[in-house]
Image (tube, rainbow, N blue to C red; front, side, top):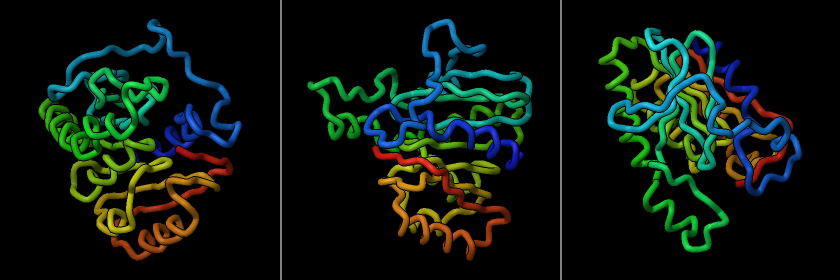
Length: 217
């Protein structure tokens, strides 16, 4: 399961950011965001509105904790859940009445972590036996927190926001971290520390990969 999740998510890394991107790769092949795209539906899971796709009867689920700009992802064979952690209010840099600091107070990663725990409980009540999670940028911190417990079977962090060395040292589940070659959120020195921590961690599977592109938040 871990290998499949990693493969599916690796190819979507550079599509997540639309603001402050210094590498042209990150704006190539943008997703279609019209209201009719996507084969899934929006329902409530664990009290949280979420986009879901894939077979609803599947025993395997993936939770996608998105970047603050939103992107819906799907995969074959898994029940995919993309929670609306921002309750209909993704960060809008063009909204001069709502700066990032003010927005983040209402949409912090700690709240996202608590929301995800309820969502996981709801999925397990439906019969899902194995859950993986992927976190992009803001969502990377949420998934890092999940990885400190045994909430998921595997995790992937991509261009993670506010993830510390102590977070990585505390990881208990198989994890992969994907960063850009030049990434202001996960700079080379921190990436090196992450890699060293993963190499000494007792997690059965762990890895860190670098993508040749430049990202900034």
